[in-house]
Image (tube, rainbow, N blue to C red):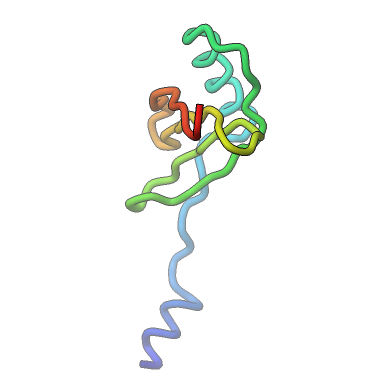
Length: 86
């Protein structure tokens, strides 16, 4: 039990993200222009999914909007997804 807490507190730190927010915003804006969508993605968050960092960019709206995911390791863009009631 003590070994678990020691590893938790003093273990190797996890590597940080490779892409900066500015780089992710540039990738997302290019994807939006390529999809001929005139919208601004205002909310940018980073999540760790299956041990990988994923950037998630969404429109700052309630009810419906757009979402784009970016893989931090490769810089690969996910599809531009619509969500909500529209």
